[in-house]
Structures are given as C-alpha cells and as structure tokens.
Length: 497
Image (tube, rainbow, N blue to C red):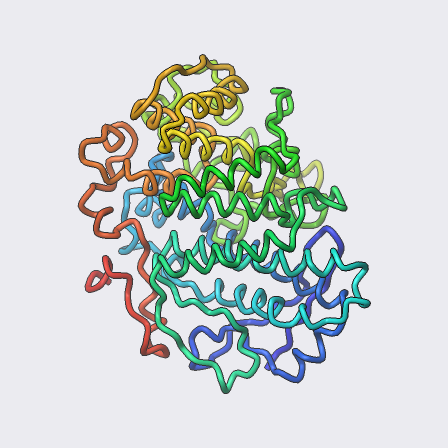
C-alpha cells in the first residue's frame, strides 16, 4: 500500500505525491489509509496545513481532468460550435449526446471525486483532535476545519448537479478491510448534507484573508455563503438564496472591477471580485501545458494569435448563440470575451493569459488563468434572480443594472417574467464559459419549458421531455458495477448504455 505523501508550500497549494487508485474491491475506497500511518501523520498544525493543501490540489485535478469543468458546465449549453474533426467526443456532448461513439467513460466515472472526498474526510476526522498549541493560533485550526467542510459541500454539490443521486460518504476509510460500498443517496439528501456542512464551515471561517496571496484560492466565509446561495437557488429556496447572497455582497469585502481596462485580470485570478477560484498560475509553478489535448489545462477555445504555434481551434464560438445573446456589440464583454466572433473560427479569449516555458521559441505554451468558480458578479445576479422570484423587482432591477452599467449597456426597466428572462440572459452573458451556463438553464427550467422561446433561441439540443425525465444528468461508468453490487445506474440512462 502506498502512502499519501503531501508537501505543503504556503499559498501555493501543491501536492508532490498522490496515492493512486487501488484494485480494492470496495469501489468507493479509492484511497485507503493504514490507520496506524494516518494517526501518526496528523500530529500538528503543519500536518493539518499539508492535508488541506492536498485537498485543494486534488480538487484542481478533478476539475481539470478531461477538461471536465467546462465539458459539464459549458459544452452542452450551446455556447460553442465544437469542431467534430478536432474534438469528436465533446462535439457529441455539445449535441446532447452523453453516451455513444467517442464519448469517453472518463466523463461518467466519479472515482477521482471519492479520492478527493477521502482526503477531505480525513481532515474533518483528524484535525479537530490535533493539539491547539501546534498551530500558529486558534484561528488557523478553525480555518482549516472550515475549509474542509466547505470543500466537502462544494464537491457533493458539484457531483449532484452532474449525476443527481451519489453515494454520500461522510467518514474516511481508515482501514481498507472495513470499507463498505454504499448505495446512491437521493439528491435532496445530498444537498441537505451540503447545507449542514456549510453551517459548520461558516461558523469556522471569517471574511477576508490574513495573507493576500491566498485571496480566492483558499475558501473563506464569503466562499461558503456563495456556495450556500447557489445550492439554495438550485433547490428553488429563493428566500434562503437571497439572504446568503446578500451577506456575500454586503459583508464580504468584494468589489466589482470597475476599471474596464483591468477587466480581463478578473480571469487571471485573485481580483477583488474573486470569491472562490482554482489556482492556475505559471508564476507559482501551477500553470498548465496546452500541448496535451487530453489532459489538464487544454484550452480548446483559443489559437493563433493568442497561442503562437496553435493553428487549430477545437471549440469555435456558436455565432448564432452569441449574436442572440449580445445584440449590442458595444458590450464590454463582447469585446473582452471574443475574437472575430462573427467568423467560423471565432475564439473565446477570457482565458488567454499565455506564458511560454521555452521563452522566445514559443513552442511550450502554458495557461495561467485561474478557474473561476464564484465571483461577485455571479452572486449579484443570483440575488437579483431570487429577488425577482420573491416579488421584489425594484431591488432586483437595481442589482441587474449594476452589472449592465459596468458592461456599458443600457439600463433595464421591466418587471415580472420579462425581468426573470433578462436576468437569466445577463447571467449567460456575464458568465459565458465559466462552467455555469448549462446548470443555469436546467436550474431555471427554461431549457425544459416547451412554452419558453429559450429552446428555440439558445439551445435546441435538449427537449423538455428529456430534461423532465432527468436527461440533463450523466450516466455512471458501467465498469464500476463489477465490484459494487449496490450501485444503480442514473435512471434516465438505464438500458441505454
């Protein structure tokens, strides 16, 4: 059995060694720990910091594996006209085909998520018992515990949006011989647990950062409240969503980047607008090579001149979609997000901060843009949506126009259902290619509403029959069934694989 060897570098969140998936028959026990080793390891504050750093590193690996953050959240939304000759699998996914030729089982398999959850559960299980005098102060111990509960809530919420019901493991497997398979937990119960975890996270975390180098890339109280707002919006608890979002906006110390010349820096990361991000910085040895189309930080939406030696473009923008979404091309976001959007090879350039590891030769491009999970503009629009549902349209319009004013487009003055649609369209504009669009369409039920023009206007790939039957959820890898007899297939996909 290999040991989990982690190296903590303050602010950088690096992992130098990770346990590989074992051949254990217990399918969810993907990172078993010897109990003697585990007890010996969690002895002091340095160990705790190392362990939470490993959790962040594993989350980074999960979200960048097979480019899944954007494959799940953006590819099915209709934002791109993916080139089938350059990227067959994701072309099919963009057409709503979650199974079939060239759609790899890596998109169906959640084992790496349980490797991440094993690490998080170890932190939750072990850190509370570490003596306080081994930490720099009491606040450091509380922060690590709060971060672990936040990361567990985020991971399960993320998984539930992808697969719906998932096995809910809340304890680490300290002894592989005692590990048990557990059935899928209903999505409503998973989300209930996420909210319970967030209450613990919020009680242990504070707003702000003691070290500005950790801005947004380590969770704080604002990150936990932003996640709470998203979960409650997903559950259509608009009162709860509004209250959580209001705390982020009013108490978090976050600000919209008002200098439009600096707007692109929001997507490099650690801006005053950032609430939670995945650190990807070449300057901190966490950039990612763009030469591997199947791993990590492959960037299919940019090519030359943003990447010097890259002539092919795998994910051109969907011109029809963009033209409907951006009728006003003076919009700051149209200018900052796209390059030659009216052509057949329009590029999405939000994430085009490229550094070349080989210098002037420019044959080894490295992406250096954080993955933006939550930022203030997102939470402002989410609160506006909640206010609209609560009948507080005046407040909703004020928030909506805060975002429109920064973008340099006209204020909006409507109410009711028209305001609801306008807020959703504003989210699709503002958060284009930020892993949110498909979830927003499903969550707001526009994509599954046969009377809504959203289907014709933005996405004809999913009809209301499929979405109402749970066809927005992904299947799980049939290969996982051979060692787990309590596992069941996602209902929509039963008999289809």
